[in-house]
Length: 247
Ligand SMILES: CC(C)(COP(=O)(O)OP(=O)(O)OC[C@H]1O[C@@H](n2cnc3c(N)ncnc32)[C@H](O)[C@@H]1OP(=O)(O)O)[C@@H](O)C(=O)NCCC(=O)NCCS
Image (cartoon, rainbow, N blue to C red; front, side, top):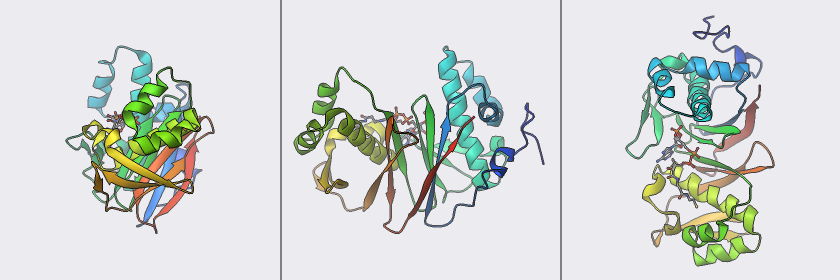
């Protein structure tokens, strides 16, 4: 078995123990990588980068930003290599015009990621497009302004009953949806209208127009200090438990 260039890590060694299964049609796998620069996982992420990506690291002035990039981009290549059975550096990663990444190597394998600093989380899907977002629950001095700017009247009523937690939960729902459809900032969050029925979130309208696609929203998190959302399609889609790669 080949070694990852520049390390003593065998290609795939990290995953042998985890016994990673192939991603079947209709399935979504969730992964998290815990941030730690003194770990074999971080070393492996670094080793997975292409020469072009390594050159890019030096353009970032702050070490923390460099390390974040190594972990999220290298981690993406590391995990994708397991599903594609292609060596990490040879995977053809591209971005759609609004920034959503995809791979030329398998257009049926959709994925998305979110980086909080302490964790990068990933969703890999053979059930159509996915969006994923994670936030640390924390105090925000401008929370009221953010609520006012990003949420509709009905949503504000719901959030204000349990402010911080509901704010972050709802924020990740909107963000994960915007990432699932690949829009990013092009569609502002206040243009999305959700209804909440028995604690379940349903997307009702986009830009005031009834939303026809049946997007689903699942709460996910690697640990209780964070809230996150996976947005996906298909009642019958099987979403696996989040698996965490720790040092
Ligand atoms: C990129 C964006 C979609 C999410 O950024 P973010 O939350 O700051 O960062 P995350 O770590 O969660 O996600 C970043 C990753 O999303 C992916 N991404 C980038 N653009 C994307 C897009 N248009 N669609 C889907 N995924 C995208 C990339 O993999 C990116 O990682 P990279 O920068 O290492 O390539 C952001 O530009 C954005 O537009 N967010 C909406 C902001 C907003 O107003 N939210 C309010 C919610 S109420």
